[in-house]
Length: 568
Image 1 (cartoon, rainbow, N blue to C red):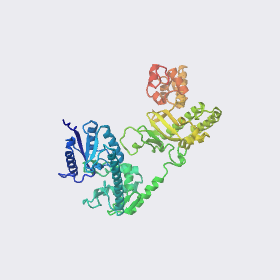
Image 2: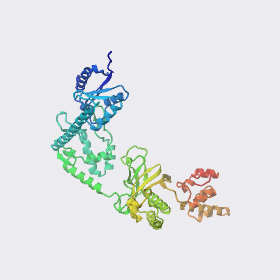
Image 3: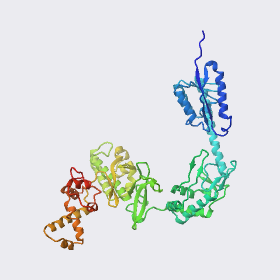
Image 4: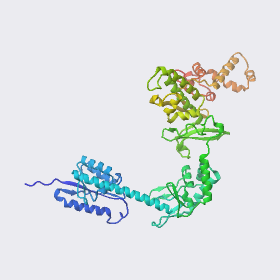
């Protein structure tokens, strides 16, 4: 009695690095597949059976496992539909030794083996594994040498002034002969390039050039890939304009890393204008972004103290900027994506002076709490506590007075999100301020999380951070005192005309701030205003804008107080 061989389902995998020749009726993938089919047929007596599915990857490098055909093969192996993988050569499967180790481990886990047609071995034996590792080491070495050879060829070709492919820059098209490594001027796009250079020569400001270029309808290069994908054809961003102005290709040069060589293509911009533009760009980059008169809110280097340190909840950097309104220069920190004029509806625009002082307040409150609780040192030292508390008090005084240089040195990084601001302090700087060694400071003391909100207050925003200290609003207090005085005069029979005559206000102004407004606020609300515990967005203008509710709970709800207590 004879026993039949168990059936071994085989899968054939083929790959070709380039897509050259794949459109032919019989290509390299077909040749590999035929050779593998013949090999499987020769092993029919061992129970080998070729599967019907094909696993082909054309035009994909063997240096990655992210291949559609390979991923389908691995999925079938994991599902138990394949017991043997057959390839023409092992480098068809992978050229990476690390990737090969992963594949073999995955094959073993699924009970699958691996065979090469032209290299007769398999992974079922230790000798086969050793041979495969040696061959793959040489395959990987060959791949790295090939990559170096290609890089050297590109460098040598660019040194001769040849264009080495890729998406051509705005103003140029690739030579119609694919064998010629060169560029030809696109007349229509060249006019766009000249217009942008002329705009910057006239305006000297990248943002102004961007806005003018967009108003003129100028667009980036529209490029269509062979796959059908379309790139470009959009309004210029500030970064694109800067890159265009710095590209030496427009004066007939070819750049390769740090070197610039004479190119074999025609120039669009003359050398004199190019040199003039580069001088202006260099001067603009070196120009300080502040004035001497703003020293109280800027560091000694003329930059905003929180520049480059904070990010918003999306990870976008908060960038310092400014605007002029009624002759005043107003500074802000805004999400970087808003600078290029994008349509992103969500982004931060924070008053710079308020944000810088808010950060200073957060730090001084944090350090003060830690000093009082003896929680600054890694190991609590009650004897040193008084000295540290004195140092912390001095640090708090300096921060409260506005010390941008101190804020800049203390803050390492941070983030601003809805409802919360997070700061990370520099251990060396904090230790220096407290006369300590950096390793003596508790690492938890370097991280601060504090409540954060931007609330409207009249026509501008007000930043609210941390546990707000009671702070009476002097404008509200004066108005409240006058309202009570005028109301008392009216109750004593003094005519409204005489009250108005004794002040600089009209009768209607006095009337709206007595009988129908401030004097008739609930006692709890008036007490909160007197103690400075009113909501931060409560202003005099908000109260007198319309008649107040007669119901005290209605007043509390209307002005943002806690309804149950009548207090914030």
